[in-house]
Image (tube, rainbow, N blue to C red; front, top):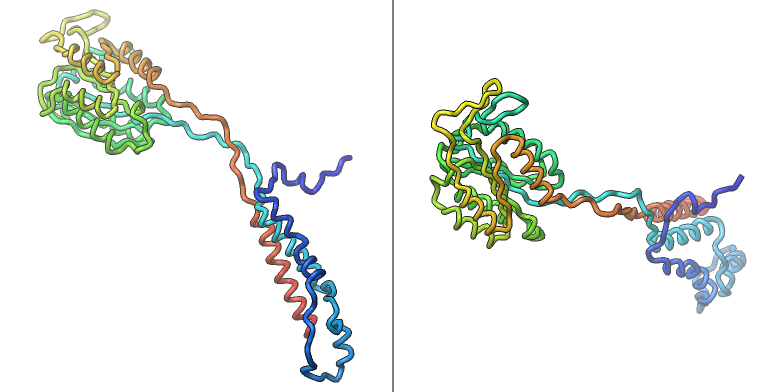
Length: 343
């Protein structure tokens, strides 16, 4: 049966500064080459002067250390090994996923309560359908920093950019129609999203990694900032805007029958939404039902992929602490033994 060599107990062990091992023979060379100090005249007389001369060698070369000497030699050897900085490769570590700074803008105007969508075979309003699709989209964005803002008459940021997608999902579920007013301020929503992305994105974040996904079912009817001017602001700050026009055709499904809704379908300014997307390098989408909306977010997930983890890395674990501690312990033991022998 083969016997493992001592160094095999520490696989992947390496020395960063191996030239420090050249210092191992320095104490021996010093004892061997340097002349002993000679006394010019007798200073004190002891009763056992002859014995003292024999020990001191009467000015001859110093003899190798005895007694605790081997401990000091071993302590010096461990000190040289510690100075050589031994390291060991640890277990492979997968780097975290690196994603984008992604801001979601959701329309909460009064028209989002229209029940012209279907979810799980039952009629639901537009906001409920949008929440379900957005929640599924969030599940696929591991590695992104996601923020949520809502807009109606005004735009409000509900969550900052964060890796905690669960908090974003919770704020999304708590959103209700009319929370930000009954009108639609598309331009202000884009302006607020750009402001947050610019302030919260680190300097190392690349421009192509800042994305806004805006969902609305109406026309810009409020706010101070014109949507097209807001698009120019987003373009100048490196924010890509994907716009989604969401809403049915003014019909409602009841027991499988398509019935017209009172007031018909709501007007959606598709031309402006398309111009916003084109100006910022994004895409415009039109969703008339929940299935189409889910397909759109799947397409956006493909267009804005999360960067997958790179090759696994093996961290370097410092091991110089062990020989350094051993050298200290041996030196201390040597001095203790020397003191005990003198006593």
